[in-house]
Length: 341
Ligand code: ZN
Ligand code: ZN
Ligand code: FE
Image (cartoon, rainbow, N blue to C red; front, side):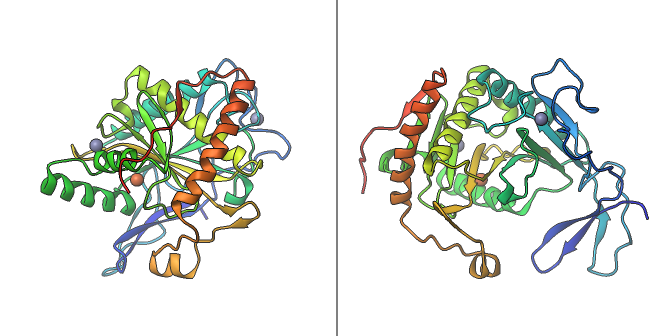
């Protein structure tokens, strides 16, 4: 049987499920890193490299297993799944990757987003990074993924609805307002450089969730200038250094880029990056369990302000480590005091 890539509609939740039976790829030879320079698919002479995912959930020549039946809608799993190899260096997190590679990495996300968004069948491009075996990542070579989807995913749709309503009702961007409130309350703000602010949001769902918002209002990766690209690379590096200093373990996390959909103007949408680590304490994980999955209601077993102060302490340790490695940050820990409760 050939590989299947299809979308099945969940009529209860109004959401697409990506179904694939990944038959077409060949497994990598074990022991050999497929992302190191000189591997069959990588070659030499690059600092950052985009490859096709060998077991793509979506593909441009997708074949469904069946047709639709009444409200059981089936569509081909059209789209692209890419892997972005972030550096030739075989191991490490974003805080270990040379800054120049990280800057090229952000530039590459922009290039690939632009290219995939231009495809008439693509409505959304989401770059993300899963780090750590806890999140199912067995390859240690630093890499991210990019999914190009034939629909706008539900979480982004939800953000769109709220940002658009706020824009219409208040004549202002929702994220610009959140950023202003965070800077006023100050207690949860961790780091800032000229273009970006990193903070643990008032409404965090994961214990050590961190959001990175640009100070300027714009909707997608593709709208960033050179200084903003460097500042985003800097911010990602600093957040990773902070996380890895939190418990002095290589902290697993998910990092996702939220940008506006490809085919919509969406002036009200504000680009941002979100980090979700899995831990709630050094040796305890926060599980998305019955109430989180069954209700989509998150419980936060601490105070966000307490977790933020732990992150602030981790940030100074992380910055000291970066400095010891010879990295000069483009920003500073946030130190202003609160002007609001
Ligand atoms: Zn490698
Ligand atoms: Zn905004
Ligand atoms: Fe978001």
